[in-house]
Image (cartoon, rainbow, N blue to C red; front, side):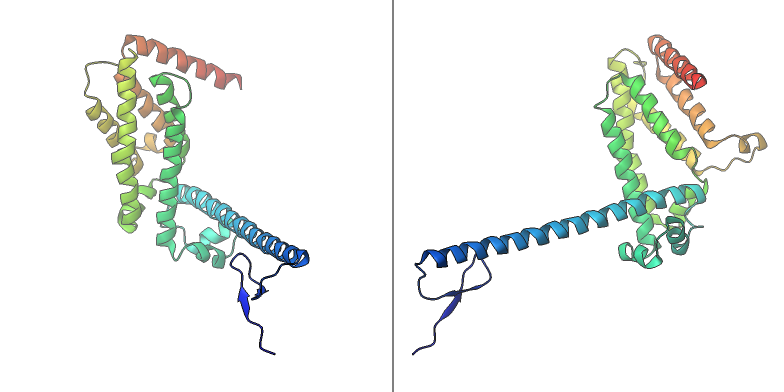
Length: 265
């Protein structure tokens, strides 16, 4: 009696007789084993998906909280040990995601750029004119940068040039375009002055913001002024310089309304 030849069906990883199986029980067995294999594969895919989702959520948490720490205390002053301790995770966990602090800083910067860009794009979906959008942008900037440590920009430029380049490329590209598009929109809506070079004005505003981010006031009175207050004044100064009489009237009504809302809270 010869040895029976064994082959493997491509749709399932289990042996099937080389002879053709004709009985209903054999066909049912094949069907059940195929379904069982598919269930195992799907279960593995789901478990792997949950694992990836958990990893992604942990990474997002690390990036968000690290960004807050850098903004508050500066980048240079925070070691990987400090970051892990402040986040309540082990240093081993931190190094599972990032090889060193340089990689962490670069990843935080990319995440910050992506989040800011998503906020800008989200504003296109919300109703309002150019001044409404500009006020919402100003609020985001004041919230993000109002508590920023003055050393952040200097730390980036001197010790983390790759992360600094990521930030500057974004600002000189997409942020500049966002500002100019708002200027063009305001002109079309009859709220901004027509006699201005939109690219030049957008660039000037960006330069002012860069100067604010890198300055440490020597004047005693300025030292007692919060970053949020300086940013607010800079923002209002910019808006007043680009609006026409119609836009100024609308701006004043919005500012008065917001001031009343703050006082009523």
